[in-house]
Length: 143
Image (tube, rainbow, N blue to C red; front, side, top):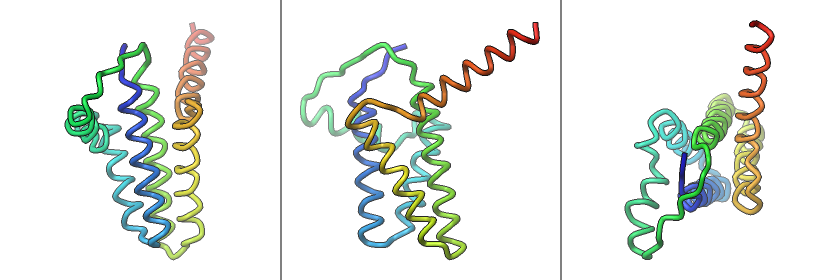
């Protein structure tokens, strides 16, 4: 399968930017918004807001060519879902009055998106492949 890593990079930049603004302005509602964007994009990839903004507006406006590479989009989708789930937990922490836990979880997502953005190390993708390998090992033992 092929995907454009520039789309993923823009997605990461948008996640980091929104969560940083949320933290600086102390606005947990922005964290909930990013969680919703991430989870919606995970379960309905054609509705991935940040990726669509890049593909529909940023790339054509700046005249950036597609840069398709062999990669498994399912791994990146899984990673986004994990990040979205962590932000849901962050939002729940805010809802139940634990700002420290809420911001701590949000900072974890910023850090992991930043790691992926700057080094191409995708912890969520690593987890995806580990789960896939474990499932394969279990299926092999069962047969």
